[in-house]
Image (cartoon, rainbow over all chains, first blue to last red; front, side):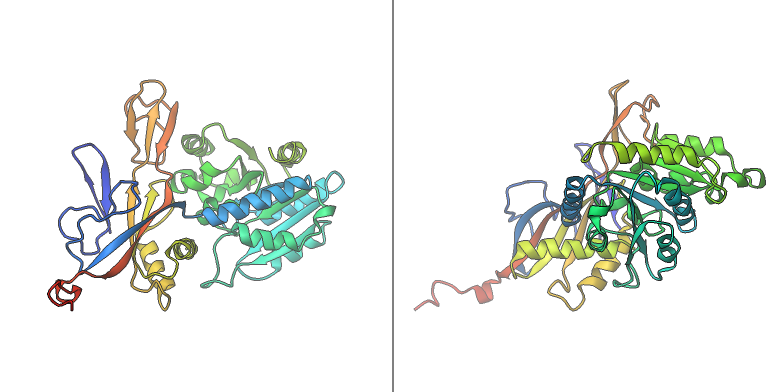
Length: 269
Length: 126
């Protein structure tokens, strides 16, 4: 699908192929609000209505509402993302007890189906709201701002200081959706291979910190930590990196400090 | 498969502007840095619009290449890979200029027939 071609003025276009012949542009770059143009292939006239709205505009408006509502209550929020099995839930099972005396923690737990993760976290001293995303076509692969808003509605927000949104395990889609968080974190397991930042640049670019998990497996894997850091630097120069083993708790202090820095910042920053 | 969600969002936004009028096509601009698979988007558009007022409506996508401008040498170059680096001097001191677009630009309404056979003539008027 799509043919890229360069024009005399140096711009490059890609036309989708749905039978338009010749080279006329069906979407002229004028902003006049009306287009009479060349519609020679059509039997009827057309009227062009300019929209100029972000595709995710509605999501972004809901995300902004979430952000405002949470800031008003002095709650700080982290959107935690990763591929499936990287260790988000295990990291949280370590994190919640470690911070429970400092902060009242809420978890919005996104999963396509089952309450397995939510059950695991609910005994640890955090309020947990489960958001199953399987209402759509076979399950949404991400949390959007509306789903998170529904999850927030099931938490007693007046009794919370810090909310961690555990997104659906997926390296692609969650990166595209603002849910109203103050900071974005991702868990990356070294079993995933060092080239992942280059293959999933949107995710690795979107985050404020990368928690490199399963670091205890380093002696057993052909994994080049330096190559991984180079890949990461190429897509998100200067991003914070914290190496941990969530299973044993090794390296957790730096992650907890990062969370504290988010939790202690002024609301709305 | 967040393309399904995107299609739902596109339909919702356009329906709000179209006010019940039939929409022939929707025109999007999507930057190269957006993780949208063109074929998947079209497939999801067919699936999502089937049985709705949007059935048969075409989705036109204008893809925008990812370009960076370099703060060191001043060049503007197009990225072949998602690595933020000047294509001219290889500096990483660059600013992303395009490639993150994700916009519903416009849509086209079908505004009735202009076929002279049915449009009527002066002579036919009483």
